Length: 269
Image (cartoon, rainbow, N blue to C red):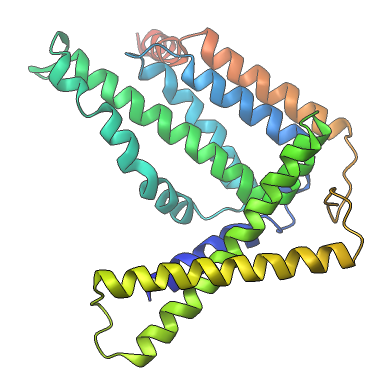
């Protein structure tokens, strides 16, 4: 079933974060700082910039290599949300028809350049955010944010949202399975049946959330959710931040593709 597949895919992303690699062992604060710096650097490029963004691809590539993260799995997640950003930029080629480049005799308008720039920025930003979750886990990301000064109430809300997302998915999967076992028309569902399913999911989720909350109170919950592992910020984490931030800064400050091209042409000449 499609829903089962998506549910287990979500669980697989969480399972990847509990591997034991160099990237996974880094302090969550180190990864959060570098990835936030990376995302802000990506969105700081001008709207017609493409070549300057290409060297930044090496940042997520490094996470894929040293974090042992399957590339196709993350790319599928990026593709799922890509229609939204395509919708944002699809009108650029229509609204901005000024000729910007000539490639093998083919004219490329400024609208197409800005559209490809938006797609590349989206790809880099979303991929790095997914890699943060895939190498850290959402609870540890929250732990890192708390240590960086984010208010506890905000962290608790994020963790509850994360936990209840699985509760909602679990209840939805039970109802969908039950319906498919009772009917032969598995792919057909009318509006009335769909509305009934949504109302049942809503009621069951509320009831289960209330039971979970009472169980947490019975176990002494005081508004703070503890993370199972405590991290100690060490010299390796600092070295990772310095090296990553410096590399990203150099990629933003200098036109590396142009410099490399000039060096190659000089070597050939």
